[in-house]
Length: 303
Ligand SMILES: Nc1ncnc2c1ncn2[C@@H]1O[C@H](COP(=O)(O)OP(=O)(O)O)[C@@H](O)[C@H]1O
Ligand SMILES: O=P(O)(O)OC[C@H]1O[C@](O)(COP(=O)(O)O)[C@@H](O)[C@@H]1O
Image 1 (cartoon, rainbow, N blue to C red):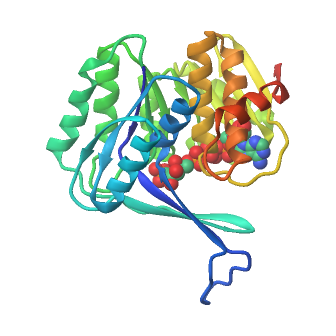
Image 2: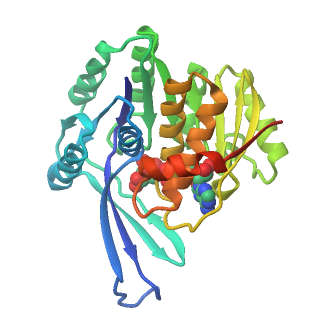
């Protein structure tokens, strides 16, 4: 089973505005709502790819109800804990470039945080736990440590998809997988990363700290996987890009679904890249048919 934990789910409110003018009244040409947040995206894609998944996390208020309802409609298994306040609405403005404004999120108290950690008592050594996204402002960052310690006690595999200082603090737990993009990788070292050689060099340093697999995503350039089995460059397929929100989450989902299916890191990477790109070429997250269509367009080389 692949569990995902989204402490701060969202409604992703996508607004397409052809001719956006800052400081004026703008009218959207098209608006769309999706249940979002990194772990929730991972679970939605896993379900579409036919993998067993369960979404955990906190939801609140009318926005939380929307998130739950949509997940249930999509037959994604959920055990979301209801908390006080309102789940956030993250605005994704598509006006030529993509601009994102992510909200702060509801109030989570210690009792609710402990409830979530207790849900992990069922973990088995074959399970994966994807810990993804930012924390609601009211939650201490130590909750991630507590979650990882519980996973470790049950010998479950930990996947971390978050950025900033939080990611830096969590590397010491030697997770199974992290997936920074090349900007987030640079942030870990206080540098800007511009070349693939630099990606490999900084990924190696993280691998030396004990992280088993590091996938550094590079949007349309694909991704580099640094792992015990080798270092691989996967080139992304070309296509008509409609939406890059959730592309990173789809890469994580595809990689894990592929890893469970093929038990082979290179095939898992192929499945991950096809899933990330299929999302980039869709309005919402990818569907399996598009992922399957792109699989043989992913070029992988050992470097
Ligand atoms: N413009 C694009 N063309 C093709 N594939 C893309 C594009 N943008 C993203 N992807 C796919 O999605 C994956 C993750 O994208 P990226 O933008 O790096 O992640 P994040 O959303 O975490 O920043 C890439 O490795 C690639 O497979
Ligand atoms: O928790 P954070 O870091 O604010 O990110 C939340 C946002 O990230 C997303 O999960 C998309 O993430 P990616 O584009 O990195 O895959 C959105 O659905 C959501 O609005």
